[in-house]
Image 1 (tube, rainbow, N blue to C red):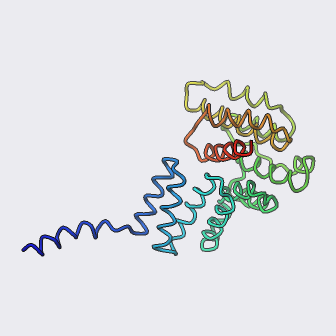
Image 2: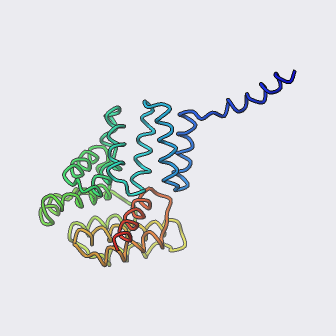
Image 3: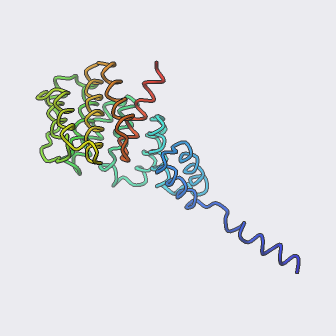
Length: 242
């Protein structure tokens, strides 16, 4: 009877042994909490238990990108895409990692590919430009700016015109300021305005303005979207260099 009792006690413990799926689920939950280091550990554990769980590589790539580990991020994304090449055009996140890893030619290709599935996205046009500036220079990159006319998010139309050389940074910021500051849309508008103004200044070589607007985007206008994590990673990198 005692041995049976001990065995019964052991059953829940056996049931709680981690599995590839449970570690993946834990990693996903940690990503949502912005515990990116914890997420990397969980996804790594998931992969150790099931190396063919390709989604774990993709999600670990996200966590690594948000930690500023861009080469690791690209390696994870590439492993995922080798097994799932049909998702390559959708993978704008890989393009961002390529930009920060200074693989600009590859970044240009990634964002050109993304255009085939998402042609009306100002953000894709911007990241394509940011990579292309490093490859062919500002003037040629501006001529090759992906034309986007149907992105209705505020202030994407103004951001497109900024990168096309038709508006100034203050015009982008002013457009965002017209949205109710107390609303979620207002916070998002101000975040994106400051983020993409900061990145525009980065292409212009104005480090002071980059830091100013990136700090505003990340510290004043936190949003739940992936791009906040990108901006945060960028800002952490800038602060580490000081």
